[in-house]
Amino acid sequence: MPRTLPSRPDLERLRREARALQRHTGQPLSQAQLALACDYGFPSWPAMKGEVEVRRGSPSMSAARLDAEQLAEKWFALAEAGDLRALDRALAVGKGRKEAARTVMRLSRARYAAFQQALVTGLSAQRERVRFGCAGALDTFGDALTRAPLAALMDDPVPRVRWMAMHALGCLACGETPAVLEPPIRARMLSALATDPSPQVRRHAAFTLGAVHEMAAAPIIEAMLAEEPGPRLRRGLEWALSKLRRPAQLAAGGL
Image (cartoon, rainbow, N blue to C red; front, side, top):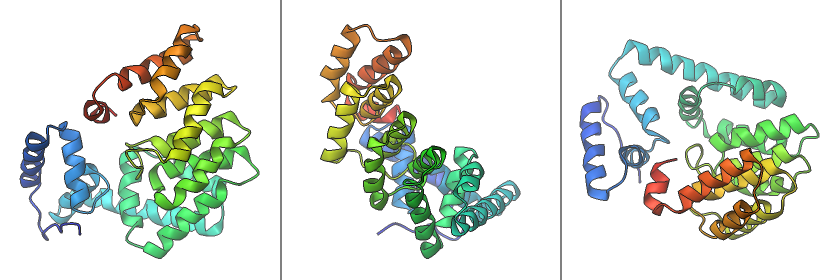
């Protein structure tokens, strides 16, 4: 079970605890901070830090908490109204604000589950823009229950929808995605890397497979580089290959 913060937690003590965990595990500090935050039941270090400062009465963080609550209510209301296009526009905020609002939203389990379901419903919308936006939102708001619908979107007829689904399924820095891809998702991404007709999709497949340190992608990427792809695709392939050539622990820390 997650540990519980005291009513007036000490941020400096938590920082020392994160540094001690870093020394013990050999992780980058950012990874140790994330692990510690998760141990206390928070999705990220900034989310836990924000909660600590709110509890200690920081005026700036009280304003941030109010902002998070307002965003959460706005997003809940748009999802409940089924206005996914407006929701997509409303979700265009910075990562820190989005994660803070997500922390607030999770306190209302039923509404949060309904919010996630609205995004999943949007994955099958007729409008390409809605499918793309909902897939992008699920890289932050997704969890184990949203992965199957996202995986189906990897076969969408629109290239940018396909690559956004791959990003949401593999972006470890955003949502609650596993460190190892499920075999069917892994196989589909490897296939997209090698054969998708869109260079953009192949580039994003490489990014995702590199980010999750999927070594089976390395020989495919090496063969693609030998064929002299376009400059943008080549840069993506080279980045992914550089990640795959690093030890898995260091690669994860560089996300």
